Image (cartoon, rainbow over all chains, first blue to last red; front, top):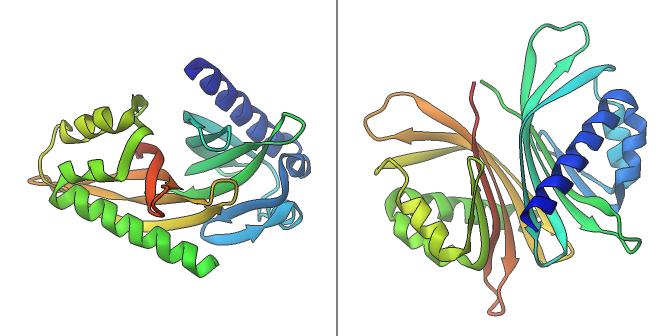
Length: 125
Length: 125
């Protein structure tokens, strides 16, 4: 069970940031109308506005480097909570921005998962 | 609704770190047998082991300084997810340790909340 959760968390994280770095508009497939994102304190509701926000971030190309992934089952929903720390490298810039992000994934009726809760913060040094 | 969630999140965070800094053993009141804590990658299950872990941390007195609190409703459980960033000052040490922590609070049958999921990470600079 624990190994499954860790494997699931890592698979999601790899998939999420791969999409973010290679084809950001396709991240919309991971959210639903009830999803919530808090991005640096700004609250955004629903897949459409979340997708718009992610696509309008003030940088085009970026690369996420992941340091830690902690996953736990969310026993009351059959979902999973995932806590990520890492750094974000923007194209053409040398320094990295450190960040932390949490996801709460909830099962869909089809047996997949979608992002119910997403909170992102840069870590200022 | 949004304001209620923010108020609830802030109240919990204030309460949690106040207990942590003033009477750490009483944190056990916030966990239950199904609770999970991941502390710097170490997984701990259930209120008893979580309480033991928190009380055995290798420092006695500390103070948490909170920088950001982001709260969202967890629509599928009636709970709330809370993401905290801040710094931890240990007694007798000058520098602060930066940390991020997430909590998933779930309602009890009595209408209170307990910590279902708790993930803590120090942010290394």
